[in-house]
Length: 124
Image 1 (cartoon, one colour):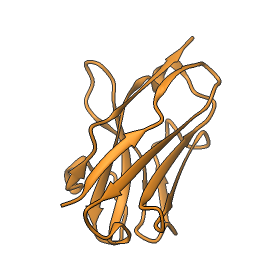
Image 2: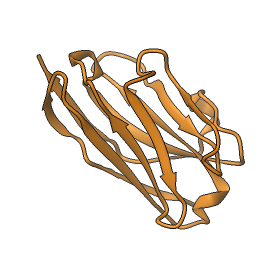
Image 3: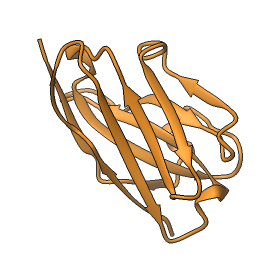
C-alpha cells in the first residue's frame, strides 16, 4: 500500500506559477513510476505528466508541454509538478498517482494508488 498526499495548490492569476508536491509513504517510493493527472468540473480525469522510477524519463500532455515540469526526489519520497505560465484552462483538481514498475505511462488505469487531490484555480 502507498499513501499519497498532494499539496501546493491554490489560486493564482493567469501567467503565474505554482509548484505541487506529492509526498509518498508506505512502500519504497523508488519502486514506483509516478504521474500527475487533473480533473476539471464536468470533465474526465486527464493525464498531465509522468516520470519513470529513476526520473530519467518524463512525459507530458501536449497541453502542458513547455510550461510544466515533473521531477522527483527519491530520497525525500516526493514528486513535484512545477507549473509555469498558467492559464485559466489549467483550473482543475490535480492528483498524483503511483504505478509499480519502471516505466511511466499516461493511462489512468495503469496507476494503482492515488492521492486525494489539490485544487488549482487560475483566474483570468
